[in-house]
Length: 160
Image 1: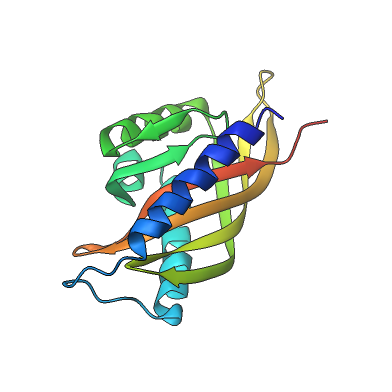
Image 2: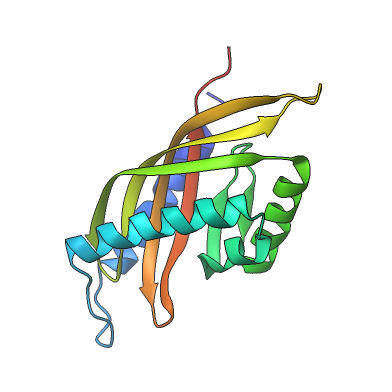
């Protein structure tokens, strides 16, 4: 139940974002399904490689200027400056080995959305690591400087 409210919020937010994206901008070309799928795969690859490099600035640049991340703990992080700070803290905690596998992606308006599986190793208090995983729902947009995440919402598997 704890994750239900953030997931519901993200779903509503994503729906609003998709509804806005569905209204074509006269200056924007709508991506094809193949372009949206390639963008989702590329964003996932960049996310993993920047995570491995512990590059918080590059992580923040993957998002739109006003991009949103709902953290695994449920906190909402908005905007590149806040995202950079979040990733600096995340890397400082020792999180590592992030892997994304895009399961499905679709074009919508001037962007798209995807569902992916992910895994990451997070530190435990005793100096060892545990692997967490789950799914990521992402809404992304094609802007003049390329593709960016608009909203990212992970859902983690409940801990025993």
